[in-house]
Image (cartoon, rainbow, N blue to C red):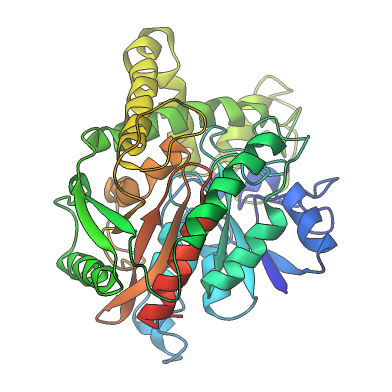
Length: 451
């Protein structure tokens, strides 16, 4: 099995730059746990893939290596990348493009707010975000610790499942890793649920359709694919049930408050002294010199080391998020923004627990009535590369980030096409029931004939 690795997962034989000047030419002294497990199973690491700098972005344009182009049409028309440039999605766009172009069997990415599932939807492949703690984060360069998850991209759900079986192991090096006792308990319950689905149909499965995911920004093409996906599940024998998750509108602001606050804290270590390359700039070179080599100025000495290093080491989007995150953590706004965002996160998690028929193993909750949820993976097909994104780049995550806030498993499967580019649908399940979601996704994708 050939594997491509997102450039924020540590490898001892290849550089790990996070697509940033700050870590240019950095090579980790150790391999991430997921890399060790894959290599022990016989997988061949092909190389590292492009990404948004430090995982911050949804279009994969914030990178020192340049943007990642969506290769979907290129496979049919070699001139498509010149005439109709579309984004591959972010921040794991490089991994998604590598899989879509059949450069590797599977690729690893990181999913903080949809960074695996959205590129999968844009590129017409499978993207899986496991439950938080199921896969070790040891060796994953942190963006937002409480949200980051190592994800899998592949061309089939079966390849995704095989990879998941390899890397889903308890890791003593990761304090957030799910304990072996809890894994065993959940695996037994997961196995029972899978045995209840016989043959290729989904008779008896109850699929919830959350009303709150029908947002104004949802394109007509995505809405039509969603309707067809619902009808297809009904034809397979599943029961379709509308459900309400009233706190979903809080997910977008809560996510960006929490994620940026954690990012500000995590990236504080890159100061040119402890971590990262350093720069000291003269009054002339700070405006004209765009080289990536650190140097010291005889005039400035060391007093501007920290300022110059972070100014030249981080790109515009990373600096923007650090500033916003630092503001969130200041004394005046911590109580008015950060703490309410954490409360909103718990309410969103409770919404999921209240609709799923399986109990959450971490919390006591009365069971709901649906087995899984079906939603779109993105509000549209892949946008053009250079269109005015602005705040829309943040809005693109609205379909995927609730799963990260709740820590539940979610998978994108290709389900339709908007004129020329693919559209994916997303299945979400209860915390810890990862193989159950993969099992249902495999049945659905085979039936759709999209894999």
